[in-house]
Amino acid sequence: MQEAIEAIRNYEDVDSWKTIMFLYNSALKEVNTKLEILNDEFKHVHRYNPIEHIKTRIKTPASIVKKLKRNGYEISIENMIKYINDIAGVRLICSFTSDIYRLAGMIGTQSDLKVLAIKDYIKSPKESGYKSYHMLVSVPIFLSDSVVDTKVEIQIRTIAMDFWASLEHKIYYKFEGNAPGYISRDLRDCADMVSVLDEKMLSLNNAIQECLEQEEARREYGEHFREISGDTTKLGLSN
Ligand code: 0O2
View (cartoon, rainbow, N blue to C red):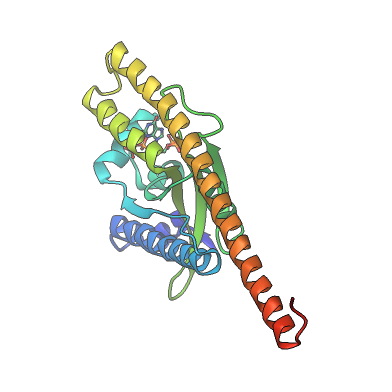
């Protein structure tokens, strides 16, 4: 298997940018399909949907250039492939924090995905308050004459974390990273509220599940009892 950089060299005569974007788009499609299948299988087996929705995106050229500059790299296709890990990005939005770790476990055991790095900003949130679970994976893209390992960043977060991150992202860009102190403080307070909300929603959901299980057990016991008393009536054993 080869890295995307070698693939670019092999395609030197062709338009490298188009080639590389073709690879990242293909990687996104592969990972997206995998995640949809995992979600469908989970729904089929457990009657439960761990993924609320999936968003995919390819980083814009302007955003790639900005990030290379921000990290002090020269603007080149090689540097972009080497240093920008989130050119192909998938975001999985879940209802509960427990879904995040369940999904991460399921992704980690996919034999054709290589997990290159994990950043758990849920256990260790960023200074800003940002919470999310990031997995950098590589997926083999099978071309007619070669196989190219291509990186995809998977971000997994709850609906509440996503709500927070979207607003914070907007504010970050609006103030170009220099938001007034009170806005940053309010955002950190909101991040704490998000954590409390996520915890409460999870414990509420667990309580609901417990009630449903007890109800099911009672129903099963009732049916079993009715069956037994029917049998004893037939045998003339009932009072
Ligand atoms: P944009 O505009 O969303 O694309 P790395 O070289 O991979 O170690 P990197 O890329 O900073 O360094 O890794 P990380 O921490 O996994 O961040 C990747 C992406 O996660 C970011 O891409 C954001 O989309 C998101 N992210 C990370 N930190 C924050 C944060 O504090 N707030 C919000 N709202 N999003 C965050 P970009 O390219 O930085 O931004």
